[in-house]
Length: 259
Ligand code: OOG
Ligand code: MG
Image (cartoon, rainbow, N blue to C red; front, side, top):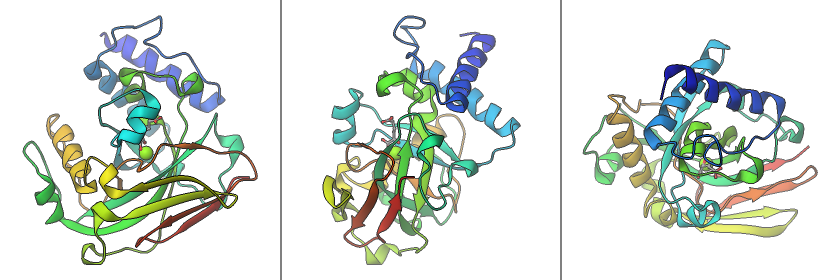
């Protein structure tokens, strides 16, 4: 795929985000053969545009790491994207900033030292965890009705748009990552429930997958980056007025309202 075309697609995604106007997935008519490799080139171009506009990358993130998400989205491979400084949600979730926001409960991990793949295992990651935190991701696909194929969602930076992190840092000896449970309520009604092992059997496996995917491009995962390991449940649409409560078995509870 030519550089110019990569840039055109990245720009269309940025425009959709800025105008809060969803677009048709590229694989539907225009680029039915969009490959994973091409899609990551588009994602890189999109990240570059955001950087040039003055935004800062906070961390990579993993996506599509649980069967719940695969079944919901019709896609069955883990992917990565990036979160930016401007995406941090402070106070309420402002509905007007999004096209059609959904929330996901996630386990976050910070590494103690840099890691580079290939060949990194879950065990390697478990030896190198600085601390764990709880997260709520607010995803907002730029595609109409969240209708996308793998290439589309990779190009779209894995639907990244918002995130809330717990302030407390939990040390690894205080938590059993695979058995950590989560319950999401909206207006006191249970809307989703999950467990850490939903995430590629173990959230540390998700970090290993990230390290190995980035390693294939000669990139590291850096110490200190707050990395979301992927939704533990299917994602839930939210609406103005919703009071969201995400309760974990060990990690800090996160509560937020949609305005
Ligand atoms: C892709 C979002 C991927 C996750 O945690 O699975 C992601 C989507 O479902 O729109 O962030
Ligand atoms: Mg996510």
